Length: 88
Image (cartoon, rainbow, N blue to C red; front, side):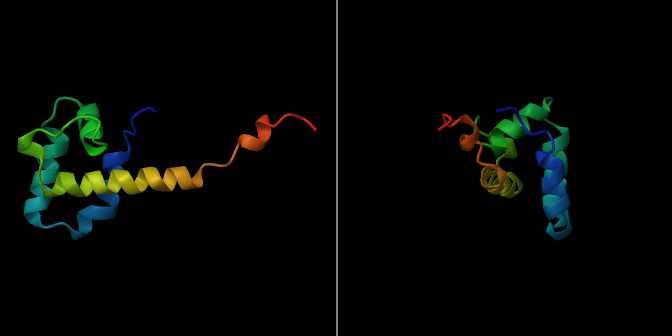
């Protein structure tokens, strides 16, 4: 599956308002310091281990958000099996 570059922006929309100033600073570092946006996606989806310097409460929130988002996407996907049934 392709990474979801909108993951961090959707997360921000839902979570920034209830984050503390320290958490906002950590979030800011997280989205600005890694040289590659894909890294954040891989860490959030646990495809790659998160480096210690970014493995904090904000990253934990992002991981949880990614899990819930994947679950929602699976639930929303239409059941296409009927398209592939042999004609009767």
